[in-house]
Amino acid sequence: MIALGVSASAQQQDRKLEQMPSVTVSAKANPNPVEKSYRRMQSGLDLFARQHAQSPAAELRFKLLPRKPGTDMQAITLAVVGDTVDFLVPIAVDHTFTLPRNALALQEDAQVIPNRRALSMTWRTDIRTPGLPPDTRRLGDLRLECKVGMESGLISNSSSFIGRLTSAALDTPAYCDKTAPLYLFFADRPLFSVTLVSGQRRVILAIDQLYANASDDTGLRDNLPYCDCEVLVDRTYVLPLGDLSWPDDTRVEFEYMDGE
Image 1: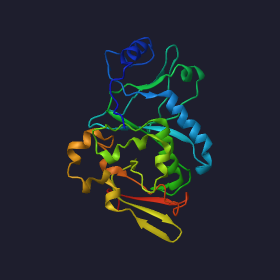
Image 2: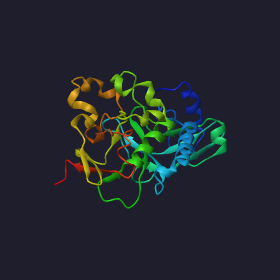
Image 3: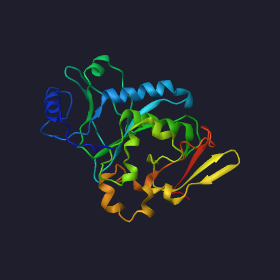
Image 4: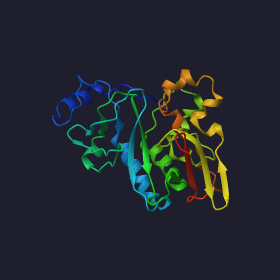
């Protein structure tokens, strides 16, 4: 994957931000913003609409997560900025948001820009079927999260990071159909175990499917700055997304380190 960094249009974006008095981001205060393509994120919305049957009761939200130690996740301002269009996007207390459709922003290939430096945060999709038991996710929701996340261009690992986690194949939704894709999900709290449950079938994920496979990679410490899991390793897990012996209604059950 291509690392987030100073884009070729950084100076242009800085000038646009300086013209937005209602947005607290400025070139002087934040010369290196974390930005995403509005056009690609809209493509993610389109994919979600096409495949909504996989998670019929869920809605699509995007989520901001910390990547570097000390990242302040409070009072984040998020703006869509194009050549002539600019508007703020409200962020909920859980750091999720919806991205409104705007024809002018799409035409101008606008950027979605929070007032945080590059590599300080990462992004994921958040698709949750309501009414599930506590500490439980639905596999179909997570399958769709992966596909929409890939289509939206949200993953921001550096090409220097462990090669198997940064393959060019990660840039397409089709990657999520592999039996065991290395798409990193983040639990709400540090994990003790993750269990797949479908009817009478129960399988606890192996240790190498947790913690960004840290137990099998002695070089993880050196490579960690290149992974968007840097401060979330203890919440990280991967799933057998393409293994269709697990139906979409499979429950993904979490035990947390701070649990009983």
